[in-house]
Length: 294
Picture 1 (cartoon, rainbow, N blue to C red):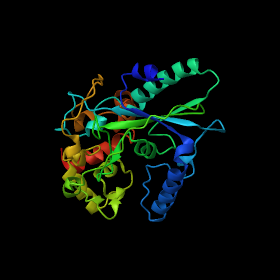
Picture 2: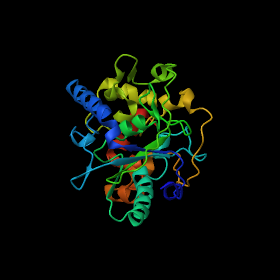
Picture 3: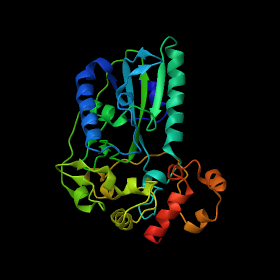
């Protein structure tokens, strides 16, 4: 198992058994229900709360979950950009999913009678829950999952299986609660008492398709990004002296309005379809360019 995962240059992963987290799942389910009732659930999230915690594969109960942290920050990434560092490389849904597929192919050969499924962000399960529960990372006040080695600059992928695996957890740690992310957040989306107010997050607003209010436009102007936002990560002390990823990821350090506006939707998709910032379409980016005046 370890050798198969290490072949993909993965050094941060955990394995948890479903039976060991049943109480935590129940508590998290209650939290999701409460959050939805309070109107805190974003339209970008999976709306079916049952699906977010349903652990089965082809109608068979799942037994184990492999949770993987995929770091994306390399020496080539730039913080002096109009797009978040998380979106400067190839869309992580593509390269992280490719890694998971290769792992599962090898596991399927080793365990031919077992079933496996994979997920990277765009599946129904809540990856953050499993990452936090297993110690793969800890939750920052900035609502990020912070890994001890790579900081918060990473994505989470899951392999769910009916195979019973030996647990591999990492020690749980805590955010130091310095409050820098609260202080510098352009939308004041972070709060000690209320937690994360997603509707005020600049990253969310750069992806929001409906018309923006004057207050939301003001937030985008402060963030100065046409896609995403890095401010709460840049100021976070947990992101100092972290390990960088060695993956070669074809980084685009900056977008140009003229290069995008001149493209048809078909041309835009052909040129940028493998980038995370393209998933909401060309017009949203053009709108954001016009707002920040870049």
